[in-house]
Amino acid sequence: MKVKVGTCGFQKSRRLHFSNLDVVEVQQTFYDPPSQETLARWKGDAPPDFEFTVKAWMLITHRYNRMLWRKLRRQIPGDPEDYGNFKLNRKTLWALEETLKSAKALDAKILVFQTPQSFKPTEENLSNVINFLKETSLNNYKIVWEPRGEWWNKQDLLKKVHDNVNIYIAGDVLRGRIPRFEQELLYTRLHGLGGKGEVNYKYKYSNEDLKKLKDIVYGYQSKASYVMFNNVYAYDDATRFRRIVTKLRD
Image (cartoon, rainbow, N blue to C red; front, top):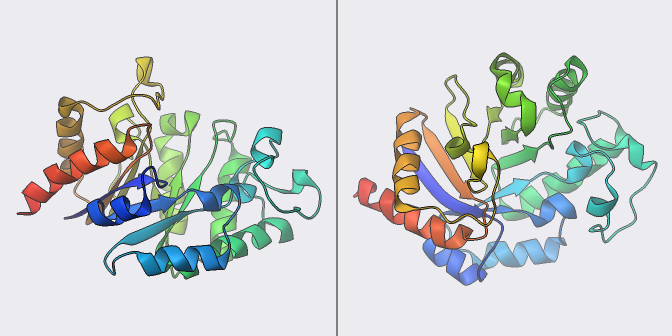
């Protein structure tokens, strides 16, 4: 099984990430996609075997939120209520096209969609996810979706999405967010461990945590796994875990 280790976003210099990790999930594309020139420079600076994955623009997945929209550098056309929740309309399709431009500039093969806890496991939202991904026919990409909140108590709905549109369900496997069905690709985003299974971005993973993570990842039986750290100590924890993976490769 191929295991790639990286971070959600550049936490250190790009040079360090390129030298010591396998992959980075670009976070700027979630808030407001960078210019094509910026992305081309990142791609040009990276080694040939370094991989970028792209987090889809929040306008596709998140309903209007004043704090999030403050991060936008450009004027967004139309009514803010037209965006988010995987609605299928001209506004969200435009946001998808902007995301795809970023993916093309980085030669990314994986697109990551993340929905907030407010995106509940309702029939309407389930239909939105399936219809959006079916109609947009993103066949040239591997599509990853990380649902937050109550979806993880609805494994039957997650499997229904996976089976209907052939996407991969992502979660924080150390917090028990792991699909209980087979997938060819395991993509885990690790947000730190808090009490009662909550997120704690300030958490630093212990050696025991990383050993447990190794056992989960290698026990899942996928063809490929992406282990993406998204905590305050992401770079340090990712490099430590990559050393574990490298020893197993050898």
